Figure (cartoon, rainbow, N blue to C red):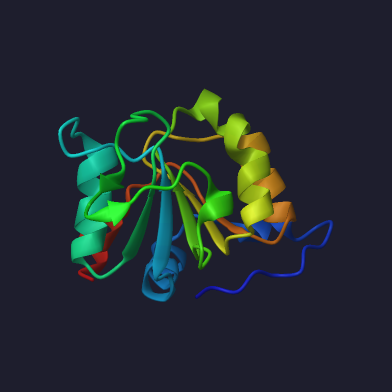
Amino acid sequence: MPSKVTPGPDDWRARLLDTPEQIDHILQQVKRVAVIGIKPREVGGPAHTVPAYMQQKGFDIVPVPVYYPEVTEILGVPVHRSLATVDPAADMVQLFRKSEDIPGHVEEILAAEPSVVWMQLGIRNAEAAERFARAGMLVVQDRCTYIELERAKR
C-alpha cells in the first residue's frame, strides 16, 4: 500500500499525482478500495461498472453508496453507509461524486486516513485535493481507474 508522507508546508503538491508512472505505482500498491458513490447493478453506469471491473482485477471493493438506502449489498459485498464503519480501513477512497459534492465528504475522508484519494474521470476539486495532500494522502483527480488499468495492462 502506498505510504502516507508526513506533510510539510511546501511539499504537499508532490502528493498530487498525474503521471502514468505515478498512477501505475498506486494501482500496483492499493488493495482495498472504498468507493463512495458506487451504484447498484440495476442502476448501472460507470459508478457500477468501474468498481466491478476493479473487483475482477483483484481489488477488494468496499461499497459506500450515497443513495439507495434499500440496497444492502453491491458486487456481492455488504454496503457501508460511512467510511467510519469500514474495517479494516481502505487503502484508497475512490469518489464517484460530482465535483461540487466532494466538499461534503472531505471530513469523513480525512478521518478515515486512506493513503490515496482518487477522484474519477471528470471529477476535480482543488480545495479538497489540497486538504488531502496536506494531510499526507496521495491524490489523483480526473482519472478513470478502468482506463488506467487497461493502459497499464494490469
